[in-house]
Amino acid sequence: MLTFLFGLFEFKKFSNNSILLASIFMSIIFPLIWCFFGYIFNYYFDFEYAVMYLKAFIFFSLINVCLDPRIDFSKLFCLSTLLIIPITIALYFFIGDFELADVAFRSYESTFLVSKRAFGGFVFDPVVFYKTSPLLIFGLSYLCCKNRFKYIGVNLILIALCILTMIISGTRANMMSSFIIVFFYIYINYFSIAKAKKIVFWILCSFLFVLFLIPFLATYAFDKSEQSNETKLSLISDYFMFWNDNILSLCLGQGLGGGFITTERGLSYMAEPTYFEILRIFGIVGGGIILVFICIPLYFFMISKSSILYDKYHYMFIGYLCYIIVEIPSNPLLLASTGMIVMVVMYSVSINVLFTKKRDVNIIQIQ
Image (tube, rainbow, N blue to C red; front, side, top):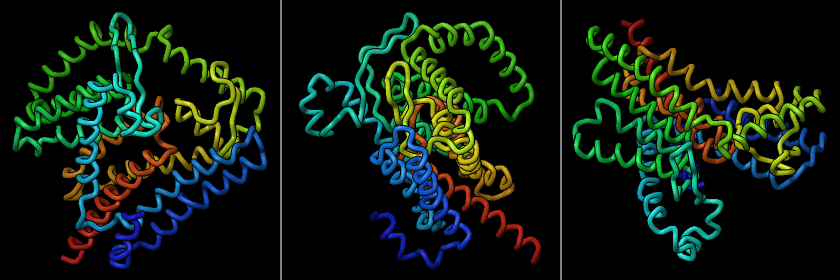
């Protein structure tokens, strides 16, 4: 609310009618339509869950006050995610005092989860999953950019703390995202220029991938007997059983606030496999709209490679790719305020990059 109110002071200078109309549709009209569908179709409709989703979508209206190119919203966002590091590490060392956690976080179960995780022979006891920890991939991507190595000592410490925090979270998606980002930037920063280095790098990576990484992932990350994997596979089976019994719901979905019966959890309104949830709630029609909504920032980046800002904000592009490909599929983050804040930042950055490209093109044409 404060962001919106302060942003109104500069709204007229940086407003865009097309963006305003699109944001009204995506943040208000679209969710209201599917809330109406949820009420009409009445698949165990729950008004509280419908309102929860509505509130999340409304966050996207902030895009209208986040278009000021003088403010680096992506940098502010990435630096703020680094606050997850001390929070998670502090919780890890003080989880024994749940009374203290309850005072600090009130109902702490909605803020962080403490458990024991086992991946094959590796046991993590305890793990602390602070629920916004997946956003740290943006902070990690920011730190790994080549132009961030001015203070290499501080940077390396922060990168190591990011990775440690991801490990402490105990989630495969966080660990894999951090590995992918670090791997990508090692290649870009040190091996992507010289052809000989490229060849050696990819030969070595192919060797390690075949001999070590595939067996490691099969044993420790994607073991079907692991509890979390069993739960997700069971949920996916429940989705297909539901659609088999309710084939028409594939078109428009159950609507916001609709629930379905799962084998392990009974009546459920929110499950981890996000893309299956999108199809369940919005169907093919609404799910297609959501998919376009997710991909537009990527499209803006891809067509703006000639923009002077493309390289500057490429770290957001990489972080976002990991977010939607690795994090989102197994974490219910997109259809929530957390996910919508990410979308606001990504739209803000990608629109800024796109508009800069258009300004550059206009200047060249005038010249």
